[in-house]
Image 1 (spheres, one colour):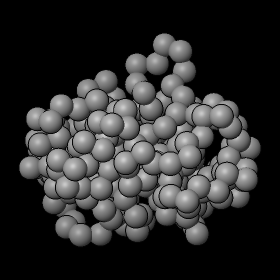
Image 2: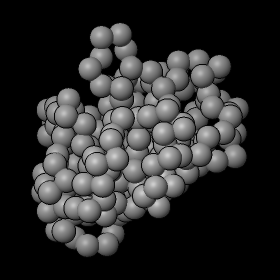
Image 3: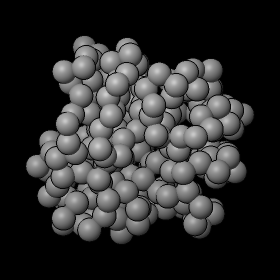
Image 4: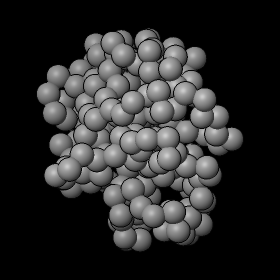
Length: 205
């Protein structure tokens, strides 16, 4: 049974559906170019709908210290998911005393990391396609066969192009201990669908 993260929660419907499905993590996206972007205050208001339950994750892209501080003050997430070089990830982890995940884009086996380089876990996804405006969350998937036989000694999540109809196969092929979805449970960009969230969580487990 794989753990489940629903990313890009930005309205009460999505939050309530994810909480009701018993997922492991709910993530809020603070990247301005994402269709799922929220402010720290909006994320905090959504999170307050149901204290406890899934752990809260804050997704940030190359944030300043002030960016992180604002999110930490409003939302108090248990985890930061960062698109940043390893040294910066380790720096923010030490400065804010919170668990940190680092996103890693891959295309082939040679791209697979051998260590977390200071992060608590890695999020493995497809490299951003040419011309993409976002480093991740592009609904792009890579050849899952690349991960066959990869047995890292650290925590990781599989992301990119997952949806209720393919997540079980993705887990079978890759052995992913956890899966992450955003657009795969949406009816339109940035609009979460409660039925798709429930179906994804069920299929992953």
